[in-house]
Length: 299
Ligand SMILES: NC(=O)c1ccc[n+]([C@@H]2O[C@H](COP(=O)([O-])OP(=O)(O)OC[C@H]3O[C@@H](n4cnc5c(N)ncnc54)[C@H](OP(=O)(O)O)[C@@H]3O)[C@@H](O)[C@H]2O)c1
Image 1 (cartoon, helix red, strand yellow):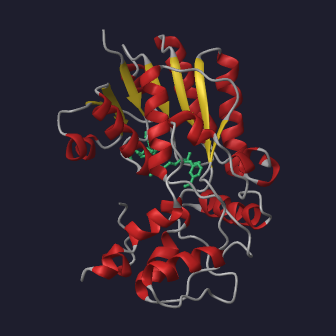
Image 2 (cartoon, helix red, strand yellow):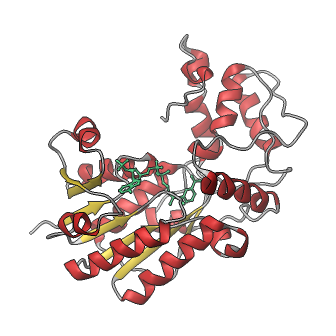
């Protein structure tokens, strides 16, 4: 009989892509959301919708009924560990056989004394490992679609690019690669011991990124002289502090290492930064520079 996979965070940036891939593979998907109308808008009747909230244990129990596998994602907050612990415990009681946990970047968890987000993920990882359910922990590096959104907006507006990490290089990963890894592991019901550190295939400094943008746009592209504004987040005080801590750790070069995990798990190289930038900057070759208004569309 086909298995059922519960996707948490399904209406968010990564969860939407994971859900789409699972549906394309032919899996039966249930999504947990506080906004069922949004799930209907995204997938119509292709998914089973469980209205629920990490804060409401009863809703998690109901959502996990007859579920075999769980994709565990929740946004960074001071409640991340509590939310994920509640889900892991409810999954264990429901008889879920494997969990894929989307964790933080490895350098936040390895430096959790200096990263409040890393400390939350670290606690959730420890609980998952202690519960004895089959699982895989994914620790993706900084996402191109999030970290480089201000770069794309600046490039589309003809401005100098932000220079946020004091010249440090970052092996950004394309969120589509993370989604593909997660979907494949969920589909296979795989367990892997030890965190899987997902990165792009090489690390880029702000200057390297400006060079790529310049090549794509066929014009000189500068970078701002100062440190530049922090990445817009739109979150609360916890998220604002977490993002500021990310910038400090990245500036130390901690997000530069490259792993071969994506290639090992997918059998192909990670999506390249050049390919990502070409897609994002395509509006400059048409007459609809939508992202110049501040809204970056993912392609
Ligand atoms: N961006 C990066 O570079 C990066 C790097 C490494 C790791 N990460 C990790 O990625 C995760 C964030 O992923 P994302 O950006 O895809 O998330 P996101 O777009 O912010 O989406 C958040 C999702 O969580 C759901 N949600 C929020 N509160 C909820 C609640 N109380 N009950 C039930 N559902 C709730 C939302 O669903 P509804 O609103 O529909 O209920 C939504 O689907 C974080 O754990 C972060 O640490 C990010």
